[in-house]
Image (tube, rainbow over the protein chains, first blue to last red):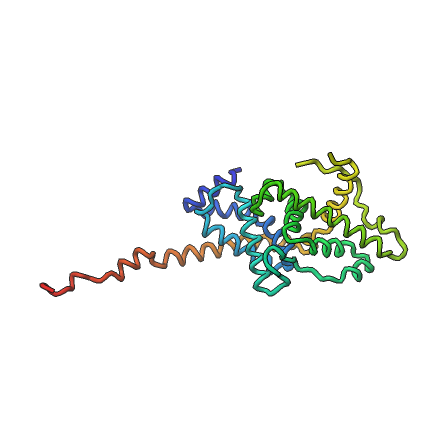
Length: 201
Length: 74
């Protein structure tokens, strides 16, 4: 299998087939990240199409200072932010971008929907913490890749992720303490099997 | 150095978040096949349009005045 950079080089020389392979390779990841931001399949699909076309049209500008995947994530995230702006969602500047989510957390929790509560809490995090958290947890990216995508130093990417986790922990604990779900211990709602300490890095 | 307990707590939060991935419930695997075609169709259209549009240089040469039509001695 050819490396991304090899395919990029071929695409720069005009090989559409090579770019097609890059699309095949990365479209799922880009769809997932767009879907998390806009929470609508058709909009996410538009964003991913637009992002790949932008990438193709500007491939000669890709200087391989980061990986092709990181560059693609950058394009997709920026395209999604622009889409959210143009859709007049709840956006107060890029650094305060809030991903679309309903705010009826208590109702959802009473209904037993813990996932919705977690999502609501994630949505309340500052945009950069949210982004670091999403890329680390859902996309399983390294802090080096996250730093490239967020265009910030490595330590900042790591700090954003850790602050996000800490804030979530505090908020979830306080939410779960105040809401008693049908008399059940809330902790029983958040058992996800064995716990392993996360390795540094 | 952070305690083992601290890492366990953080891992617990990580697992909460991971388990609530909104992309999972919204995912439509069957639609992924058509996405690739849509992207490549648009790229092919763009390339076709680009090849039909005269480049700036070509356009400039087309718009350049034809000096051979100048009157002699003018």
